Length: 139
Image 1 (cartoon, one colour):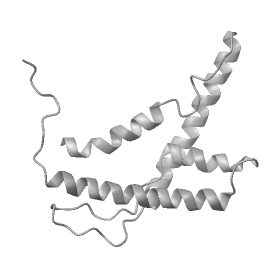
Image 2 (cartoon, rainbow, N blue to C red; image 1 turned 90 degrees about the horizontal axis):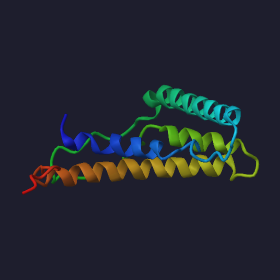
Image 3 (tube, rainbow, N blue to C red; image 1 turned 90 degrees about the vertical axis):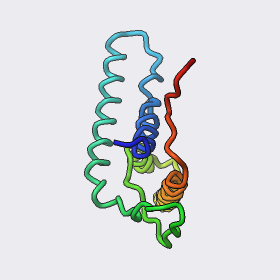
């Protein structure tokens, strides 16, 4: 697998790895409370992960990646597939104090289209540059 294909999955792993579900935000002193908090966080992560995996075939509508640096951007970039973070944000709309569901869905659609367009342009730009060694030799 080339380095070009690793950038986005690594960034998505970092996004979910930054304690997306508040695993580091418990201020409890008792083992039982820590255990309950951890179990709830892991269950929430599992539910969102399964939902994102099941939604992936229906939500991944990205345009074909560019084949050269001279390619013209597509008129419709499509959407990137829903991530665990996106599922969590959409589930967060069930809180009545949050923004409306219509606002959240509109924002999510805009964000997905923007990410798909940015990904396409990033791939095209990388095709125009020589592949660099990410681990240069230290002298």
